[in-house]
Image (cartoon, rainbow, N blue to C red; front, side, top):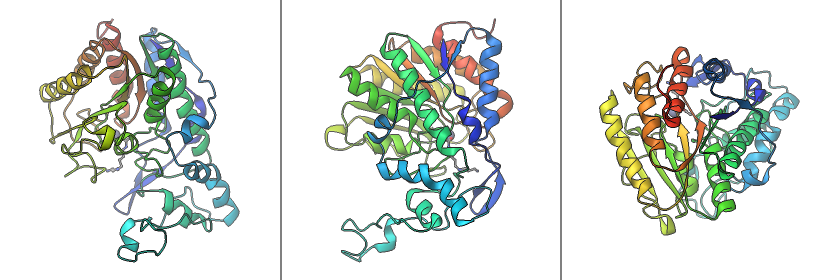
Amino acid sequence: MRVVYSPAHLGHDIASETVMGLEIPANEVTERAERIKAALEADGGFPIEAPKEHGEGPITAVHDPGLVRFLAEAWDQMVAEGVDHPSLMPEALNVRALTEGMGGAANGAGGALEPRGSISGRAGFWAFDTSSPIVAGTYAASRAAVDVALTAADAVVDGEAAVYGLCRPPGHHAARSMYGGYCFFNNAAIAADAIARTTGEPVAILDLDYHHGNGTQQIFWRRGDVLYVSLHADPERAYPFYLGRADEVGAGPGTGANLNIPLPARTTNAQYLRALDRGIEKIASTPGSIVVVSLGLDTYVDDPICDFALTTEVYHEVGRRVAALGRRLVILQEGGYHRPTLGANVRAWLRGAEGRPHEG
Ligand code: Q9C
Ligand code: ZN
């Protein structure tokens, strides 16, 4: 299977994140992508190629141009303001309820207007959480991750059965006009939108990251041409908390084109495979020939920030069942934080999708 990878991710080199105000060692680190790359190289069956530049057009097709401008300018503004922090993190978030009941204050929709002043205020306008640090290389890395996704998508549109895009940073939490959840641009959404536009066919997204892909759901909420199916931790207990419930089914032309399957703590291989079959059936019931897979391995039993109980063997079976849909696959990396097994887990999934045995 062809693999698309860019070393530009190394510039998004973050040391720490904050969780409920506590500073902890970062989870979404450069080592993740390097481990995956090393495991695929060692396998011998995964030729690695560089992404092609696709420009800003496919990004602003799904994201607010203001978000792109902010991310492009953020680090330089930090430096210009003399804010000598290791990374940029907002101190106040643009929460909607701040202007609740104020009618025409701020803007007509009751939200704040984009501030163009201090970097702290700008960051808090575009961020939805405080666990997604920005450093000098974040923008270049995020642009490269989009190019990785789009290059993988091009190859599949051109006829490849399955291509893996080693995206880092991940993307599925990034909303139309907000970054967060370690994500800056929504790689899978940008790829799915580009595929839908170039093929004129409906596209399905199957999100297998432990966390609900709130950004992807939001971007396609009103679209009937891009189906979003997600298996994830119940947001009653897990990030991103405010989206991911089973009754969220889409709206307008997108009604019925959003399927959330929330799962309990300690979800086992068997429970997961049953949920997966439901998701696969939903995709099989809709037209289209390409599926974009948001592949997170944070469902793994030993993941340090998650609570499912999946094992390496089941990833091979998950890949096998997804490929058995008989559709071409654009497989894009999302989360997965147990670094010692991350490479083996990705490799098992991809070998399963190719119909190769788990080992050998
Ligand atoms: N205790 C992805 O997997 N919260 N993003 C961290 C750590 C943010 C996960 C809490 C989790 C974001 C792509
Ligand atoms: Zn995740």
